[in-house]
Structure formats: structure tokens, C-alpha cells
Image (cartoon, rainbow, N blue to C red):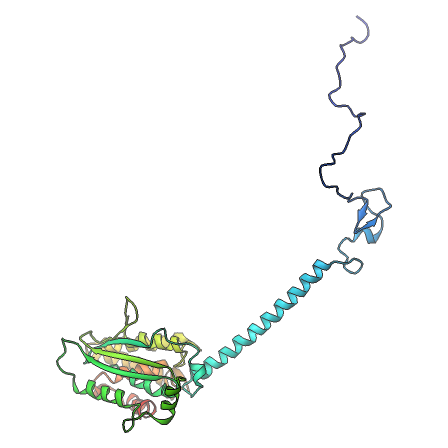
Length: 322
């Protein structure tokens, strides 16, 4: 057979010549190719030939109220951040002033209040907590530290050293049966917060226990850390706290040392930290390390302390107690 074969005809699947009716049940949209920024474009092509039509984010030639509101909000946030930074710097300066051992206002010290006004410390009669004597002295203008003493049923009588400490603690804020004029006035008006510390003398070993929760805080140095963080005092965590922590750990070791050799090794570290400086860790003002070391040295035989630490201990007596 010559020529093409004739096939049967098929109906087209898609017809392009039929009219298309747009639905009227939906929202109508503008043609993005013919209208831009509410300005009609005469160019029928998809690519505009003018610079103005190409620059769709030109803020100079088009009004963008949403963008203006966003910029204003950003500027307001930046101002708030600057004000917050200023407040943080001011708080930092106040903390430095309140932790240097100098007198500060009652309101500064009361910025952080105790969660309770009554705490309990279990202490061994053989290891009196001399740090309470120091805290009562350095906080006398800012906190009424009321000390009360109790004997556990296992303790029949206090040794002489513990009795002397209790008498000092209970008579420090009294003179002829009355409080000092400044402390009494502040406490009466309610401006000076009061903290009652109840010492229960019992056989707990060389480290006292601060009962503040189900798990007590053990050791003088840890109790001092707790008080320092709670009140932002004793010059702790303001500059190089790691150096202070090394002294506090040495004090913890010194108290629990059972032999003269172990105590001598711990005191050698403390003496090296003191050197020829006025206070420990080469500081010009006393810190939590000096308070902990003073209390630790008071609990060991005084004839084991070298000349340098003995003179420093006398200076602590004059500063903290007398």
C-alpha cells in the first residue's frame, strides 16, 4: 500500500477554544505584573524597564507604615536595654560598697532579706562558732543579730571557751541592759531587720550545722558562704572568688585536722596567702576568707600558730571584736 494509513479519529482531551469563566465565590487579587505599590504599570511585560518599578523596597519613594512602627519599637527596646544596663552597673557599684566591710545604708543591706527570721545552728562545745561574733560586730549597724543558746540533752555543761563566747554574743548588743542608741532606734522603728540565731550545743563534730532545710549546711565556711550570698556582704564573689574559695577550703581542712603536722601544713598555706599583706589574698580590706581564718585559728592550740599569723590574729581581734 502506498501513502499514509488512515486512522480512526479521536476526540481531543483538552480543548483550548472553550471560554473560561472565573469563579465569583472567592476574593479577587490584583495582578502583580500590572500593579505595583498601587501604581499602574504600563509595561505589559513581566520585567519592568524603569528603576522605580525595579526597586520594590525603596523606602524613600513609598510609604511603609508597618516598617516605621517596627523601627520605632526597635528604638524603644534599645533605650530600655540602655536603662537596664545603667541599673545593673549601679547595682554592681552598690554591691561593691556593701561588701567591702565599710558602713552602708540599711536599705542597701536589706535589698536581700532572709527567708526566715529564725535559724538554728548546731555546734560542738569543743569547736565554738567564733564567726558569729564577727558577724554580730560587722552587721551591728545593719542587722539585729539576736543570739540564743541552748544545751542538748547529751551535753551537761559548756566548756569555758564556749561560755565566754556565749556571754560575748548575748551582751554585744546590750549596754546596761539596753541596746545602743542607733541600733535600738532602728530596731524599734522596724527599719533594722532582726535575725535570731539559736545555737544548740551538741556533739556534731568539728563542723557546725546550719538547719535551713531538710539537708543542713555543714561547716563554718559553707555557712559563711550562705550568709555572704544572702546579704551580699563580706566581699565575696565580687572579684576573684576562686582565690577566696581556696582559703575557705584550707580553713575547712584546718578545723578537721587531728594532728599537729596536718594543722601545720594548712597554716603554712594560709600564711603564704597572707604574706606581708594587710589581709588575706593580698587585699586591702577584709573578706570572707579573713573571717573564716580567724574563726579557724581560734579553735586550734595557740602555741602552734607562728609569729606572722599571731600578729594578724591580734589585728583581727581589734577589728572584729574589740
